[in-house]
Length: 175
Length: 119
Length: 143
Image 1 (cartoon, each protein chain N blue to C red):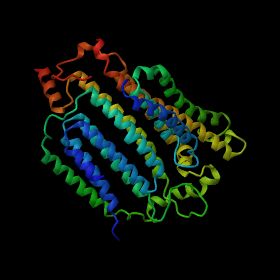
Image 2 (image 1 turned 60 degrees about the vertical axis):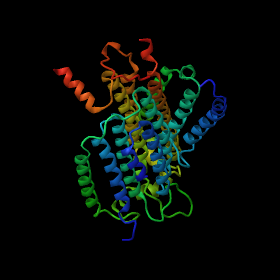
Image 3 (image 1 turned 60 degrees about the horizontal axis):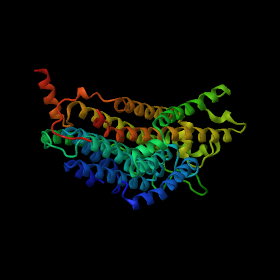
């Protein structure tokens, strides 16, 4: 998965980039299954590998397929990135180790969800009952975000184009 | 602390920095969006790996299972993925409009065009 | 894509299966992995496949864009409306226990309803977004 991510940095053909990002999210889905998050893996496989790739390809058809210039000032960027990464890794030294049942995250509300959701809400799938019942407000907010994003895209792309607004098209024919 | 230890966090950090590097160093707007996606996936991996308990199973209630993996991060990430694709689509729509207006999706060329406009 | 018989035939066979699977995921989300978000995306992908293999205009005839906009809003309204119904029945906002005599049945009903709302919104949002991206390419030609 990390190798795929690194390949994404170097590639300049955007078509290959889009395909690789599809593979990337499929690998992420496999990783989620390994980590017991079946619902999340399901979503990632359907969304990341399916819809997102189609949308990216649609954008490519509307714009251009190849990155023109070399990456700018890669050294400075690399420096910033490695510095931030080193700091973050330094931060993780205090984190609980992987799979530790005593980590603070497992001792707040999660045990209550696991013990009570069967009798209080019913569905055997705890993810569903937390999603829809205990955290109904959150999910309502998320659905609103999706609605707003779709409305925003409607505003951006749905209206008629004004041809007079086009400036130089840099010798490219889009669609 | 045996081998896996903090390794999962490091993977997340490496992925995040890869995405961050793409966002900083690439001039192409579509590649920037892809970089943001990688960044996003790294956060997902971070959350999901935190929720894992050793010996636990997927959080679906059944007889005879004692340890379940923490379901709460799963809920958060599940919705975040779908919201993520909606916002990615919004970003791509903006890229399409930028190409309409400037004829290019390279950040540097847009900057040049803007300067020519001013002079 | 008119000249690709293999693609056309296989996708004709696959699309009903995909939709059935989406419905299964939608209503089986209580028991196994699944739910409104996934089902919406899978349902949308069936339509996107249809629009890719046949023409986008054919797809528009099957599912007009206005219907998707109505679906987009009504899914969200269904979700919020279930919350308001709970409020009217004397519970808290988004508290489904008051929807039926038995709290567990009420919860189940509420979850099914709002998951359906989520599914409708997500599916319509994805199809709307796809229509907009796919419909862009042909507009400059007539202007």
